Image 1 (spheres, helix red, strand yellow):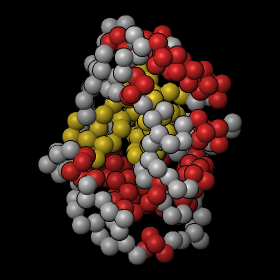
Image 2 (image 1 turned 90 degrees about the vertical axis):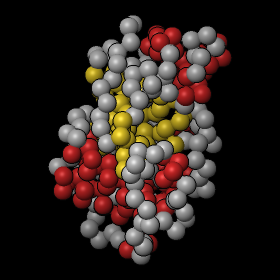
Image 3 (image 1 turned 45 degrees about the horizontal axis):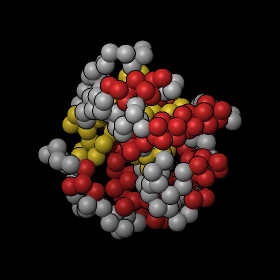
Length: 258
């Protein structure tokens, strides 16, 4: 599949009344960052921005305040905060941002604030990955597909998070091929000694290799898990084995012995 590599400007005539009618967000929050690493090269591939309270408290302390009325404003604010902090921290490599597909009304219009923030702080949009979790119940899968297609058209990378744990699975992959999938940690846990998990991951690796999709194994905590996944050809990893998230900082990863 041919993917755009250069950002394309959003049509200036596109607008969304829902975007203009939002009240200010009634709470504040910040971000922690966790690295996604390529241990074979001892390099950081990306940092994922993770929601945290302004006192460093958990994501739940923030997400529990998100409602149907403020969902759009929260989603837009997450993107802007992630880009601004990444620029402040001089983040190199990719920045991975989670988004809520049910908070995107018109993909080309709703991406405008992200483009503006990136331009303002000088962060290249070609180094932004947008992640959507595969285990979120979506009432309109076509809408999600259109969002991801538009983001690729704009020059962003796209990723499906928690792959293998949710509602869509291989059906979504058949309709749309993202740049990256992140294997759900439930598939990862004990993969070194669980024959079924190992066979499933091996199958996904083969499919993604044929489709030109990169794989990130997330939630990796044990050296044995890491070695089993490396043996299958996976080269990108995320998890406590390498680094825990750091509040408003870019933690340096630890490198396990192969």
